[in-house]
Image (cartoon, rainbow, N blue to C red; front, side):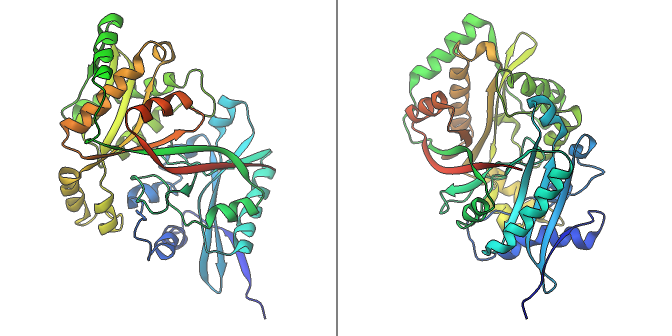
Amino acid sequence: MTDRLDIMEIDTDSRYWRQQFLSLPFRLYRHVPQWVPPLAPDAALMLNRERHPFFRHSDAIFLLARRNDETIGRLAVLDNANYNAYNHERSAFFYLFECIDERAVALALFEHGFAWARRRGLEQMKGPRGLSALDGIGLLVEGFEHRPALGIPYNPAYYPALVEAAGFERLDDSLSGYLSTATKFPEKIHQVSELVQKRRGLRVVRFQTRRELLQLVPQLGDLYNNALGGTSGGVPLTADEVQAIANQILHYADPRLVKIVMKEDEPVGFLLAYPDVSAAVQRTGGHLWPVGWIDLLRELKRSKWVNINGAGIVAKYRGLGGMAILFSEMQKSLVEGGFEHADLVQISVSNDNMQRELRDLGVDFYKMHRQYARSL
């Protein structure tokens, strides 16, 4: 007699089913030293329809694959109404895919997700892509031997084959790069940065405290949305989403590593970097309470790694030396913070110019994530 495979949509109000969904990766990755669990509050928030700002404008389902009362797979499928309106699409997204190495289980999860998306009039599915702009994108396809930057996806090497078996094809790849502070940095970049700031009337604002950073949060949200100008595949953030991302980052942010480029009183560029506390998150299993936060605070002070997780500048300054300012501040952040290693995360392979410039600075691209798409 064949064991029965069941696919169920969980009730996110049920503590038991939320725990079944959230705990699966801990079993799948228990013997994988590279895996970094999510911070428990952030993971739980994704299933909280009352508190996560995504659910104020969009919807999602959370699926489990079960056999003999055991959870063996999971999948979230999203209908991001704001994304579809901004990009003039009818796309669903998949996210939080985890599965044993069994094609039938993965196919059953995706087929259930496809049916839900079709009922909502959606015409294609992309992913992996999450609920928030801070959620890492894609499946890891190269660099499995390396620990991921905090918040960036890690998965077994067999996941791409499971996704492709469900009919998905490559949509885009993004690269993450390594930079050592021992690498000689071109002094010319600093010189160009100073020259551009002087000629364009720009200045770089740095922060000393979290309070200073929080006061600028609304303007940073506007800056992020303005930096989307001329790009596709993004989605402007709502005020609630901006605040939620700020609250999430403040768990592990070092205000000194956040740099804002200003034109008079208007932010026109940003650099977001933070100490990599992945080692502490691994030790605590992602739990901050009751004492995990102490380990995390200690790691903030002793980590020699920094994650550079976002840089952007409004369109009118992109070809006028604005990127030199960001590159210069990136290197200064590493040196001033006493860091030895940097992980520059998820730069699209379609951004040839930035990749070439970063390679010239000594960046070694050593991890690749892939986004997929298929018609429904």
